Image (cartoon, rainbow, N blue to C red; front, top):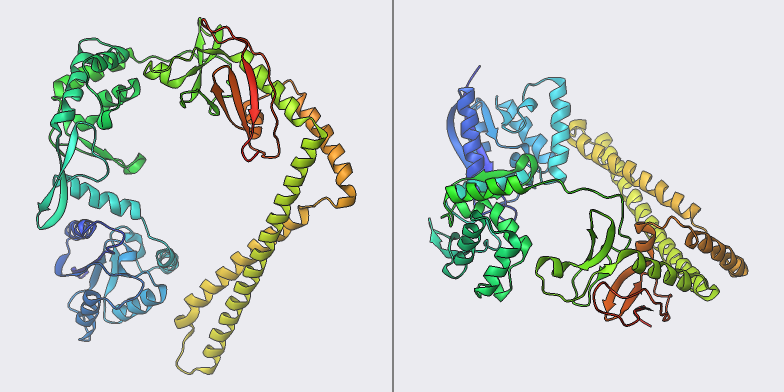
Length: 518
């Protein structure tokens, strides 16, 4: 089998990073050719051009070289991915056929199974060409390939630099780039954290010592326990850059100057692993977690004491930074008050009427939108069917046009008709099942809904989802909890004593409900 090949690479400036993915494509193709034992005769590269048409300088040069004589000087055109050759299906098919007539086959490094010439090959090739025409094939892989090269060359991957570092921007290798270098005003805090932790100090103690020493984080903020935890585990501080996730995770050593030596980092993380333990899980839920806020603005989170015997809501900032004075609030008392308030707010004929009107309004708006969508689908269906008809007419009338020339386009249009037809069926089904109460039955609907709401509200099995479907947020303000409902029709004020928070605060605490726009 002949083993002469040419390599073609292309990148789009709008989607890749200054040629590094281009360089990665080139390296990938050369490596693949060497493994196959192929001789690389020429390298063709198009920089910052789209693949949606074939009017590319290097691409046209390649075609000219391959087709100027009856027999091409190379038998294989190697690309990193089929989308590098073309994104337009018609161009791809035409140019591959042209190359094939001169003895050249297109081989993809990422899809080598498309090059064996079998009937399955034809099906697979058509499938991938369809994908490449409409989507950016495997952009994540391409980005990671270029990013790895970028970092291996000593440049920063982008984004905000880690605490302790700053960016050194300049012209490197003829281009504007950035490198990570230590930040003298921040690295002191990082080094102190590692040294204190290696001596056995806990996170809270480290935070307090940094605060006492007047050492602050970026923008002058105090350090939190969570920040210290993340910094101790962060390999950036020994010069290792990590990016990507799962199968595409990339780890590059010696990416930038370290702030901590390997021995100190390993000691701290070895200590960290010994301290890790599985916390006991109690079969208790906090109905208000995620929607409950402290008067300082921070979230209030669930907290247990005495091995899960007592449960409270506590300000998250108080736990992490000890910067809030609000005492913990007994979970059961607060949740009981909130549930009672929901009952009082919902189980009124006037509120049910308002809610029902909102639902009817939303249903009308939704039906209107669906009807407009149907009109758009009908228009596109008519246009696609008309295009198919015109193509078939051209095929019948022409002596030179072949089915292979228009077949891919007809298949594409038929796929579109199939998709649009299914979408139309779905929308019609939704419209049939959406019934809007008429004015004559509105009163009956209100009574029916009122009974339904009572049944739901009186259920003893309250769960987090039910509460959070009704309430947008709850904010503690002094001795009051201010409730904001998701349904703006609910308004009014209600006070209820839920007892005092744990501590010395003794005034009667009340619950006040309110809603925006009222």
